[in-house]
Structure formats: C-alpha cells, structure tokens
Length: 303
Image (cartoon, rainbow, N blue to C red; front, side):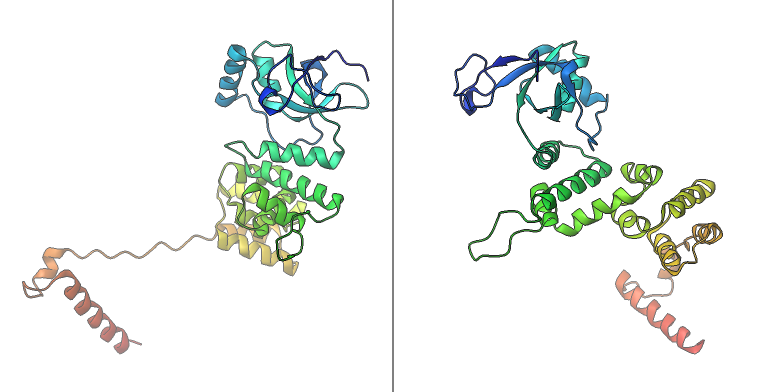
C-alpha cells in the first residue's frame, strides 16, 4: 500500500516521541501522516465535539504540536484507520496542521476494537451512550477472541468472562454495571439522549425502558413530550410490567405518566403556641413524646 507518510524511527519508550533514533527492523515507528489519509474507526462510539476542551486541545497543538502520537492501522483500500487519536486529528485540523504523528500497527479487527475502547476510556468525561456502545464492542471482541481472558489467579480461579474483564479494565464495580450500560444500546436515540443529559438515570433506563420494543419506546417518548414530564422510577416500573403483560398501549402510558406524586404532608407547630401547654422545663424532645403519645391514643379511638 502506498503512503506519503514520513517515517521517523524511535528506540525504546524514552525515545518514543523523539525523531531521529535508530531502531531494529521490527520496532514500531512514529510516522507523520497527512490528515487526509487518516480515516475514523468504523462505528466509533466516542463523540468528537468542538467544545471548550477541543478548543484547548487545538491551541496546545498549534503551540507545541501533537505530543502523544495516535495509533492507526493500514486500510486495504489505502490510507489509515484511526484506532486512537480522533480528537487529536480534529485538534490538528483546527490548529491548521496538515499532518499528525501516529504509530502504525497491524491490528486485526478485535485487537483494534480493544485498543480503541481502552484508549478512549482514559478520557475524563465520557457520556453514558459512549460507554454503552464501547462496552458492547469490547465485549463482542473479547468473545470473538475466545470468550475468556487469559488472567487467572494463583489458585486457578476460572478465567474472567468478557463482561467481567471489561468491568475490571474500565474500573466498574461489577459486570452488572457493564450489562446495564450495554442495555442502553437498545434505546432509541431520543431516549438515549435523555440519559446523556442526565434526565433519565442509567439504571432506570436500562432496567425498565430498554426492554420495550422500538415502537413502544417511540410511543413512550411521544407521551412524555406531550405531557412534558420525566417519568419516575415507579412509573417506569409500571410501564415495563404492562409491556411484559402485553397490555401496554399509548392510553396506558398516558394514564401512568399522568399520575401525580402525592405531596408530602407537612405540619408546622409554632413553638410559642406549644409552650403554653407544657412546663417551662420541658425540652423539645419531651414535647414531641407527649404529642405523639396523644396522637396514638387518638388514632386508636378513631379506628
């Protein structure tokens, strides 16, 4: 495959980002590749946003260049597929650069997915939707590689299952967290957007809404918009149950989402008024004990 990349040799970790060092024939090389030859990863789950963070990235690149090279792999049709470095490429474009330093690796599809996901999970802010599709891609890749990772304990504990491995690598509490995120991939875009906007909790959306059919989800978001409401957890649980029973309709959704939460009962007793019924030596706690004792007696008499 032809490429206009300018090869720069490196030797070892300390020289990884320095040009001009001699290396053996099998060592990785940093190459300055034209941005026009760098193409996004297929189904890349992480968004590249022109936000404040990107502005700072572009300013840094304009001032100092790309300090950490991206990772790419050759494409059969020419050019390179970005495995890690989508934001760096966009920052380079905004900084007015024509090329970007990259490490070229011959990765198969599964290896490329794992490197892509792991490198992007290092970011400070990741949306639930990004985690959802990234975790799913990595789980599928690990399963395709053999379903089990090669880590074992000293006592010969069975190798980690794919979801357990993803949870461990991503710092999630358990594989159930990974399962919940992957469930979000079943949501239609408008509902998934509400999760990203923190209007729907990840757990509630995964546990209750993701099991709805696509049509039910479409009707659900329509009713939500009509009533201008964000459903409570109990309302979503009811919606899920109606769906499982096969009785979920738009009318049912409307009725459930129209339910109003009962307002909490609050009774305010002025201290000045209470004090006329109690000795001056009574504390607030003693007053409360007497009041509740009297209320219990009254309740027993009116049952």
